Image (cartoon, rainbow, N blue to C red; front, side, top):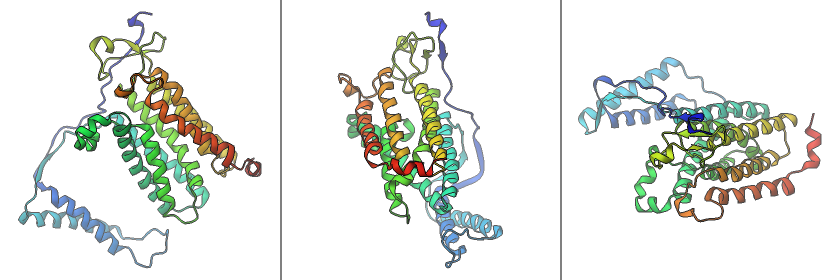
Length: 348
């Protein structure tokens, strides 16, 4: 097949652009930080101390917005006499497709989890706390996973670059570990909840979230595959780390393979959740997720270029080594921990 017969992908990673906005007067950055602190402390004063657990506070809107505006005014007045860096313009604002899709993954996941929490009679407060734990666990885990698994030599030499997350570098296996740890810490704060119950539900939204994120990788021409002459191979003109000649080679769209895999897994897991009337055998969905996702990842890694330079001579790559223990854990859960004899009771 000729190169011209393949799709050429060169999308702009920036979704849209908003020009620079000149502010009428400089704003003190520390004043803005102080305002958020004042808002937090002020809100605690507006909420009755004897409010029952799980009940939403009835705070008048005029009081809330008066507190917000007053906090920003006081914050700025305070730093008229105290030193603070200032900002006199905002922008340009250029949201990237990857960031929008990453955020969309959490929005869709939150809506799905709200449905599952309402069905189980759990509170909104518990759901909001879960979102915080999982969001932090995902970002920190994904970043540290990239640092430790794929480029430790660089980050140990330049440790401050670990914080430069805007330069890219997130690892899905690290995110998986971060989410598992986040769920463990979360259940320690919630009464009458165990790890397998929450894991069975979180992995459903992780599956569909993975599809959003891998689509973002596709827009950015990241995690590209090896050269291929298959009809659906794609030329990634904007792929980083390749020579001009290598950029013009048709390649496996590995990130799209993984996005499709995530959608299939989501459909299966959601169908299983519904089949058991929202009460699947504990550990069944979690175990099935681990086996399906990471078995698929193991196989798809054969189509992907090596992500860890130091592992170039390994028989299997870093992603495959990291997938193996998760596959084993999933298989062990399905074989040893899931009470399948109880399953038929909850089925339609």
